[in-house]
Image 1 (cartoon, rainbow, N blue to C red):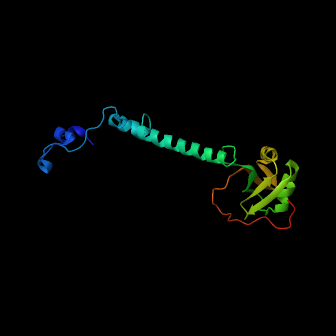
Image 2: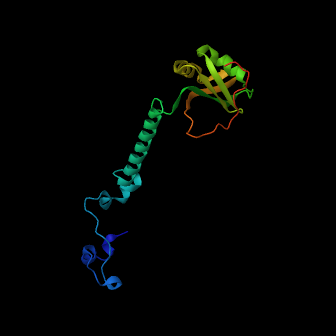
Image 3: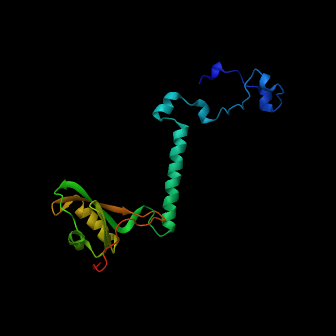
Amino acid sequence: RYERNLPKLCSFFAKGECNRGSQCPFRHEMPRDRNDPLSKQNTKDRFFGTNDPVAGGMMRRQKEKAEKRRAELKARGGEGDERAVSTLYVRFTDEGTKKTITQADLRDKFYSFGEISSVRMYADKGAFVEFTTPQATQHAIASANRSNIGGRKIMVNWARVPKRGAVSAGPQPTPGVAG
């Protein structure tokens, strides 16, 4: 919007003394501060995101939100990141054969990295494998990522901490299986 085409500001309105009301030929708006970063905003800068105070404010709020989330995790005993302490996620890709991977296959693959406390399968998409120590989890991720189980390629990475109040929707570990 071109401000040069608009009528000038009413100085009496700014002081709170204009008694003309709607008959006043001047704009009834409060003047902007000359030091306000939005008063010097350029359309090109806004489009490309350079020198953009609005985008800067949005990015600052996101950083503050992430810092607050890390502080909450630390307060609950976490290390300040969203990784689960000793759990990894195994994703089954569609590359290779379409062989169904079982809990026994996963236990056979990961038992050599450390003691497994639980394995939770989620359909034919992936599984969570929980170790007793974070070191075993880290070793398993480094060694087993992009490997194969029964001819089917797997991707292994840290599992995230479940959201507060989230209820597990997937199948639970099979009772009676050692782990």
